[in-house]
Image (tube, rainbow, N blue to C red; front, side, top):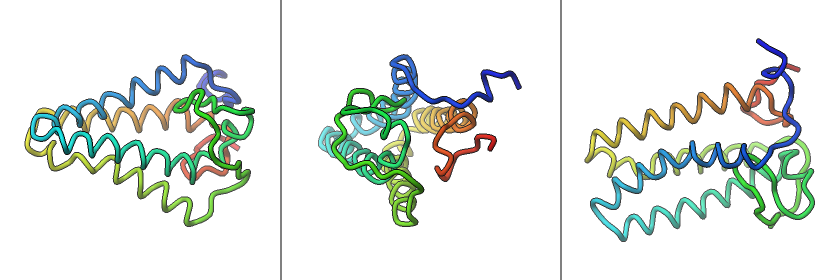
Length: 158
């Protein structure tokens, strides 16, 4: 492993934000296409639900992250850039409740479009492959260099 892969990432830049949001957009858009083919109302419900659940993750999970804490008024991280800090910073480890809420809401967001994806096996394959790519890429390139050592998925060397 080279030095750049093992060096902790103390700051994200706008390019990180663009990259990770493009990676996240593949499964999200795939799910939207699957749902839209069947129901525009369910598509609207799905989009609103995703926004609300992401805000729950933002409150329970992100408020502990050093990237959230180190910026003054707006977040500057790989998923949220320029978003106002709506919630109070909470330095330190996540409580069991916060971990549970973050993991459960992530699962709900990922599994919510499953019914519509099962109706279209091609989109289902694209969805699951893109979710796998997202998770493995996060683990490989971010979690191994993350400065939030108390994160439950952090795998940076101590």
